[in-house]
Length: 190
Image 1 (cartoon, rainbow, N blue to C red):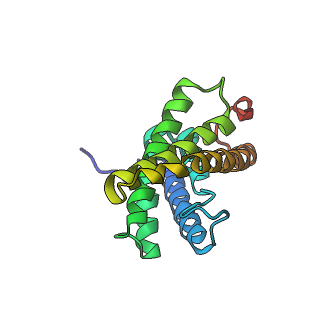
Image 2: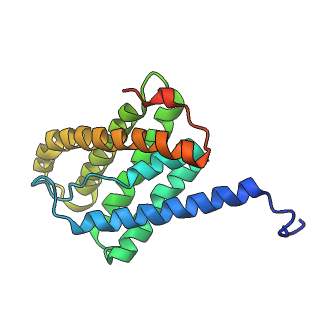
C-alpha cells in the first residue's frame, strides 16, 4: 500500500476526520461540563444530555459507525477527564450512550423520515435512561424497588430528548448550511 502524501491525500477523507475530532472534543467538553451542574430534578444522575446532539449530528453527516464511535469515545474520554473512569457512573454512561446510539442509528435507518429528528432524539434519550436503570440493577443494586424510578426516567427521557432534539434541528439547519454539509431539512419535524 502506497502511503499518502500531501498531494495524494483525499481532501474529503481528511475533512471528515477533522470534523470527527472537533465533534469528539466538543462532546467531551459538554459531557464534563454537564457533570459540574447540579441535577435538574432530584433523580440521581439526571442530566440533559447535550453531548448526544453531537452523536446525532455525527450520524447524519459522517455515518452511523462514526456516531457510535463518538458515543463510546466520548463516554470513556469524558469519564477519564472528569476523574470518574472507574466509578459506576462511567459504566452506566457508557452502556446508556452505546445503546442510545444504536437506537438512534436504527431509528434513522428504519423510522426516518416518518419520525423526525426530535422523535428520534426522544427515543435515544429514553433508551439511554432505561439502559442505565437496567445496568444499575444487574450490576450494582439488585433491588426491585429501583424500577420505581422507571416512570421518572421515561418522563425525563421524553423531556431531555425533546429539548436536545429541538436544539439539534436548529443547529443542523444552521451549521449544515454554513459548513456546506448535505442535510435534508424535511426530517426536522416531529
